[in-house]
Image (tube, rainbow, N blue to C red; front, side, top):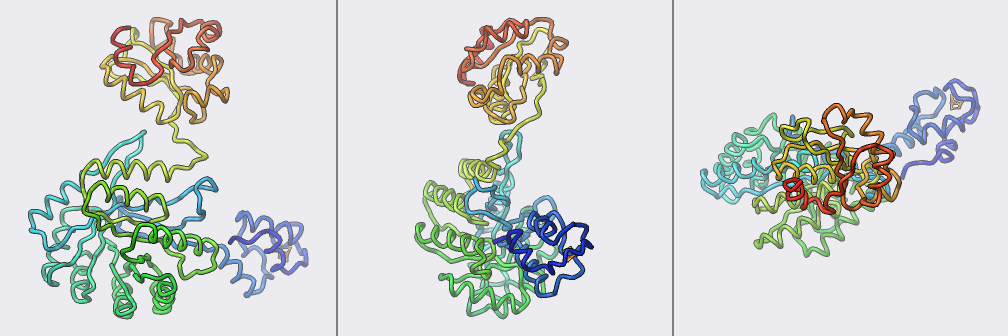
Length: 442
Ligand code: SF4
């Protein structure tokens, strides 16, 4: 837990000498608690107090980076149990297991499909993150499969083998890609610690119980390996949720710093629907990485959509820039539709306008990212605001008419809007799905 200003004050010299630039030690402590200043500003703080303060400012869950460049995946560094308390910072990595026993052509085929799992939703790119190559054959075949994967995808890699020699070959083949090594156990941790250090790679550490897992992470830390990811192995879903929740809770409370690492979950579920449901559960409940086998587009899109929603700051709705957007070959005769600058509202309207093939303008009004009805109830989507937007974005210069289409749910404002704006208001459909037929029959 972060220290309060008073906790920090107790660790300071309390001489009020002002050398830190603050009138009192208490004032300095309050700024330290807000992370607005550095402890180094006080030349008189003792080493012991400094180490306590530095330890308290460490993130409770270590940040782990896998992969490089644009495909780099960062997990960990989370600070809360529930996203309404702050937000979840690092979206869970979604990856796919490829067995090395597959033929080369099949591996390439799977990679081709995995590489295409990229989508755009509400103006953001959402895509999968990892490919995990799992050893089922000998070391030579594992190395071949790893090389094939390395050459056919830029995604971050997970090397899944308990065979030290096979791991060494695979790590040689993937130098420069910063792969994740899977996995250290109580039986092999010394060798795998050396491997992780030699190749400067992060390491998954696996143990079915949390006490055993804590012991292992401490030993790996002592051996000089700091980049760890935790796995409690295959278990029923309810037990897995318990593990993930306990790891997050103990790490955040700093009651067990040995569990202060992100987690990894492997789903071995042959039914694709069950697999997707299980993956959705772990994405929602604290997994840092989820590995699945299914590569169907519907699975990836639904999981990435869920992930996008969970890792969006609940206090800052996704929003777009408020302005006048021309859609298609919009001209001075084109209709003008009004909506809010909530991303989901805008992109839903945009999709339907594009589907109508009627060149149009969409006027996105600044409602601080609220949807139509929410903004209307909060008085952020009012006749006055819409009129201001018409003027601000010079809509009268873009079209030669003065006709405006408003969402059906706010039909109640049409009279007042006509009065304040001087534009003729037409009430559009309540649901965006009605826009294509509405525009075609305008
Ligand atoms: S420099 Fe240190 S001792 Fe002096 S007022 Fe600031 S916090 Fe207190």
